[in-house]
Length: 164
Image (cartoon, rainbow, N blue to C red; front, side, top):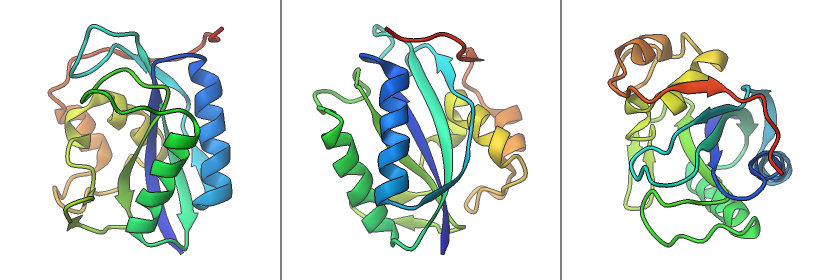
């Protein structure tokens, strides 16, 4: 079994419903969810003239190889209606692989650990809630250390509302 951390995010439609549907599909098709962070909200990162995002980190156990995980989560995104129109654009759901065990891998289709995770508070904050002492295998620092050093100044707050 392999331990995988995934980041869910979305900023269109019923954001909480899309996160829930993604969690259910991941649990059925990718691996068993073992821990789930709270849901956090933040302003859009990268392309800022769009609605706020909801984000959540999942920890799961899987038998799938990294490429199979990627293939499965891309299929789940498609099933939930994700359309890739522009880089960092608005979307109903986005699922990223953050870590796969302590694997460091770069292929044409997949880079593990996620190459931007240490630069994004909206990723590090929910990840730190689940795995504060997990050491980034390429950077050699814990998630808590990366969060403290993160240059991203976008505010991230716990989501308490309900989408309509």
